[in-house]
Each structure stands twice: as structure tokens, then as C-alpha cells.
Length: 198
Figure (tube, rainbow, N blue to C red):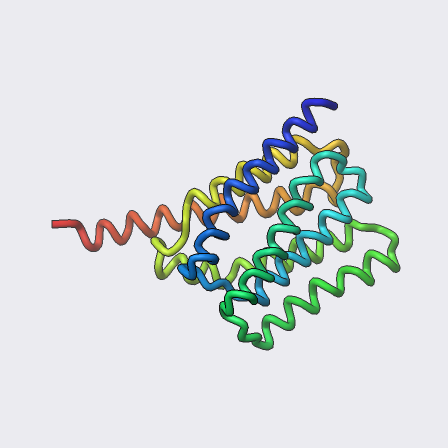
């Protein structure tokens, strides 16, 4: 199982590499993330980590736990830097949906239900990013999403037990990141053809 732990370490390293520039930009005030969005993503990611641990994901669950902790740290940092703290009804809806996974898990004694709900909430959370990236494809970092695509594929390889509970979240997030990158590249090409440089 040493290679599983090695893959997990690589995935954790990629997590730090992906998040470092983002955190640095928050500290400099160049990026002002939405606090509540990061609270939701931190909550969903950390609960998925707990479900993966219960589902015997082993070393493959560790990068998701690290990612959840960093995401919660970003939420705290965004709050301290007085970033966007407006909370809409849809924000509350996402947060309640994330928390609703816990009773499903408790009453069914099956962490798979929690993972299905949390994965759905995370995918819905990509909606505003997809809309913004379609209109402004240069506003998103391809490298950031590429690193997360690779990280999640490595997470899957590092898992010690394969089930819906352990595989669903990283597989879906990897697919969403890859589709987002493809859309951004397509839109950048279309814009470049519409407005060729002189």
C-alpha cells in the first residue's frame, strides 16, 4: 500500500500548489472571494472526507480532507480581509442542502447518501463560475482547474477501497473541472477569432 500513500502525498502537494496562488492573491487584496461560497465548499468537502474515511477510502481520502481544511481557511481569510460577505437566498439553499446530507447519513447509516447530496451541491456551486467563465473566459485560471483535475484523478488511484462513497466526489469534480477547461479554451478561441489581434 506504499504506492497508495505516495499517490496521496502527490495529490496533497498538488492541492497546495493549486491553492497557494489563490491564497496569496486574497492576502494581497487582488481577489475577493465570496465568503459564504467558500464556507459551503469547505463544509461539503470536509463532510465528503469524513464519509470517505468511513467508507474505508484510506490514504486516498487524505487529499480531500486537506482540501476541505484549506477551503475553510480561505473562507476565514476572505472574512478577515472583508471580501464579499453578501448572502443570498440561493446561498442559504446550498448551505441547507449541504447540511441536509448529515441527517441522511445518520438515519440511513450509509455515507453514500451524504456523498451523493454533497457532490450534487458542489456541482451546482459551479453554476456561477461556468456562467462567468463563458462570458469572460480569461477571468479563470486554466492551470488551477488542470491541477484539480489531475489531483482528483490521483485521489481516485490512491483510494484503498472503491465504492460510490469513495469515488463519486473526486470523479465528478475531475470531470466538471475538465469540462470547464474545455469550455474556457473554446470560448478563448472563439473570442480570438472574433477579435483578431492587429
